[in-house]
Amino acid sequence: MSDLRTIHDVPVLMCAADGETIGAERDALDLIGNASYQGAQWVVILAERFDEAFFRLSTRVAGDIVQKFGQYGMGLVVLGDISRHTEGSSALRDFVRECNRGRQTWFLADVEELRERLKS
Image (cartoon, rainbow, N blue to C red; front, side, top):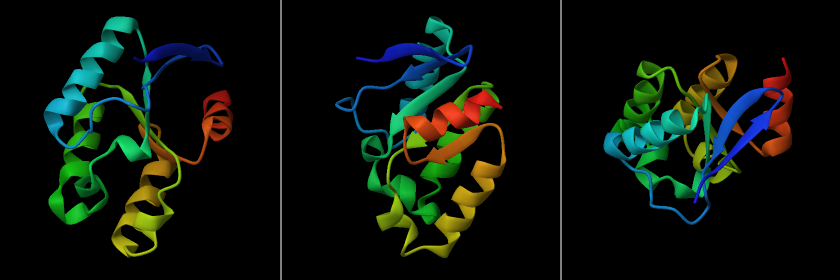
């Protein structure tokens, strides 16, 4: 079950930890549809909900999912520790750094970091 919250006047859909694995564009579309229906501007998904392929950029899964969120004007937050993935991949580290510079996709450690980002 997902939970719609308001953080600094921004509606945020917090996805449940125990949901389906997210590993393809169609999974992203389901989340975007649900978030839109509930009036959310951002979708927050725990990192462990993503299929391992998401963190291997060569699979293009992350790019496809991020692009879908962008096409629908919906923000995406990957929440949690992804260091085990970034330690072995400079490409993923660069991708995360670039995403975090923008206003559409963020890789954040915790909800407190999300609160800080949404404050500005």
